[in-house]
Length: 129
Image 1 (cartoon, rainbow, N blue to C red):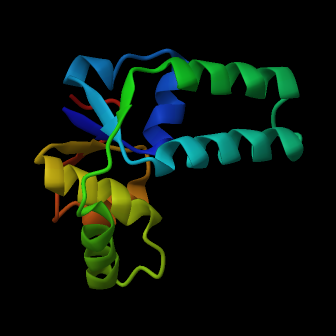
Image 2 (cartoon, helix red, strand yellow; image 1 turned 90 degrees about the vertical axis):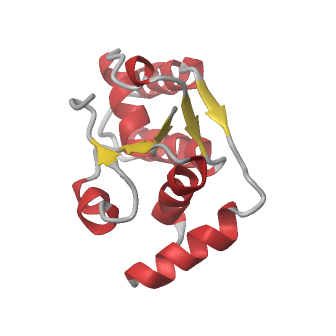
């Protein structure tokens, strides 16, 4: 099992790579779908990508075999992690918390997240196995 964050999910969806799938079942907190949708819409709104390209990327993301997971202690654990790391927001901490709760690795393309929380759970990048 592998927890996938928004940066990794977008990387997989945009490249068609199977880096998540080859590491076993992919899971994520409910936040993932809102983060990816918001990122893709903002990219189109800003003109970074054409609207049809954004729509295609969102469709590819929505087809990824990622299971939504919401353990009962997700939010308290995410709050503890964010507090311990000095983060005001708990968004990234939700992914770390889920990896900790599930006892699995976290896949991210976010170097800041990997550096900041790599001592709490095993964190890998999209090119790692």
